[in-house]
Each structure stands twice: as structure tokens, then as C-alpha cells.
Length: 56
Image (tube, rainbow, N blue to C red; front, side, top):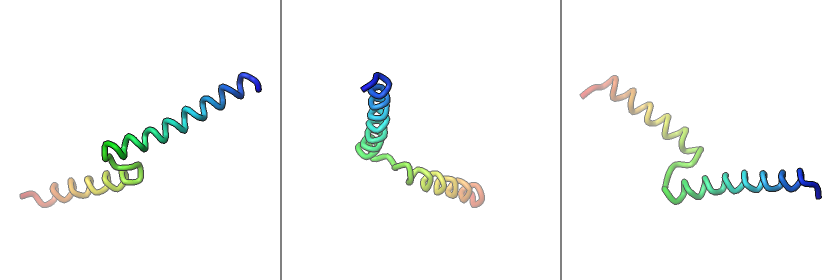
């Protein structure tokens, strides 16, 4: 095995570890996942527009 192959394997494993670590962190802290982030942002925008239009 050449040195560049070893470095490539290390980089790929670090990237995969980062992705899994990010997912696990979001699960532990009960944060929305990447799919839910878009929904939450959209719903918060709708609430903001509603409150702007229909003030108390």
C-alpha cells in the first residue's frame, strides 16, 4: 500500500466519523435533523408572517 492510499483511507474514515458524530450529537441534544431543519425554518417563517399580518 502506498502512502497516498493510507491517507485517503484515513480522510474517508474521518469524514464518515464526522457525519455519524453529528447525527448522534443531534439525537442526544434533541435537535432537529437536517430534514426537519428545513421544515422548522419554514414553519417559523409562517408564524412570523402571521404575527406580522394579524397583530394583537
